[in-house]
Structures are given as structure tokens and as C-alpha cells.
Image (cartoon, rainbow, N blue to C red; front, side):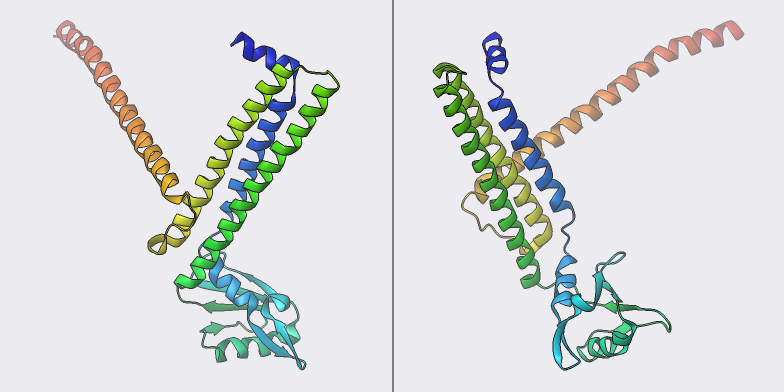
Length: 251
């Protein structure tokens, strides 16, 4: 432990790199929170094309598309009121039940559940995001390695500390890369549901890690509940003699 502390005192490269790894994981996990299965329907509506004034226009360019309350309902707010009726008619003609209240720029549309293909497109996007973050982590490691080498050449740190710092960075890169892939895999699994299938080379190994974590968490909760029950039972046992004693005194 003392030797490890000396490393931290003599170089700031590995702590900085590890902090950046952790930040990248947090940002990635946060970015996935906004991805939902209803995004499939939203994407479809944004990409629908309508002939407006003689040229093709995307619905997403003519209004804001969202699903704030119900994944089976799309809310479309048309920016220009002059386009409202034409867009409304286009949506109805495309086979979607839609309604618009008089004087409102909102069109409310009922949509079916996302298809397997639509959900898989979201899953593919999550894979791309996951791989992008892993590449980012590797670049962080490479850049820090170059800085360590430069520091060693200028004799700011010696070979031993440089090697130990590099080892810490490599070990944490492996750990953080796995964590990113686990987060991405869990999100894909949640989005795809019964349509989920393994697509990446390490998916099966990561699923084993996830299942192990789930079992450990379940065991932890069970132990916690058991300890709570035992503590409550102990309190009752301690209270009962006092109640009996009070009854005897009263009697």
C-alpha cells in the first residue's frame, strides 16, 4: 500500500487517465438513459417525406416529433400553421389515426408497437455508441502513454514508476472497457426484449458477468432483509419482558 501511495505522489498520469475513463463511463451511461423503445416510432415519423411546395420535405424538418406520455402516441407540433392541414392529411392518408383540435398546432397520432426491425435499428445504434466509447478509452490510454514516455525521457519520472503507472492504466482500461460493454449490452437487452440476440463477439461472456452480478445483488438483498427481520425480532424480545414487568406492577 505504501508503495502504491508513492506512485500516486510521484506521477499524476495514471490517476488522471483513470479519472477520465470513469468520466467517459458516466457520460455514456447517462446518454443511454434517453434512448427508449418508443424512439423507433419517433425516428420513423421524423424521416417520413412529404411533397411540400413541389419538393420533398422530412416531417422532422416541419415540426417537433415526440412521445411525452405514451409510447403508442406520437405528438407532432407543426412549426408553420400553413403546413398543418397538408401534414395532417398526409399522416391520415399514410394509414395512421390522427386528430387535431381546432386552433392547435399539435397533431396527435396513434401508432403501433415498434417492429422488430425498428428495435434492431436502435440496438445497432447502441452498438455503435458502445464501440465509439471503447475507442475513446483506448485513445486516452495511448495519449497518456505518450506523455509518460516523454516524462521519462526528460527524467521527470524513472522507468520503474513509468512501468507501474502504465500497468495501472492498462488494468483500468480493461476494467472500464468491459464496464462500457456491459452497460451497452444491458441497454440493448432492455430495448429489444424478446427480440434480443447476441451480436458482438464477447456478448456471451458479458452476459455471464451480468447474470453473476444479478445473483450477487439478489443475495445481498436477501441477506439485508434477513438481518432486518432478525433485528426486529431481537427488539421485540427485548420489549416483551418490559411489558410483562409493567403488567405485573400494575396488577
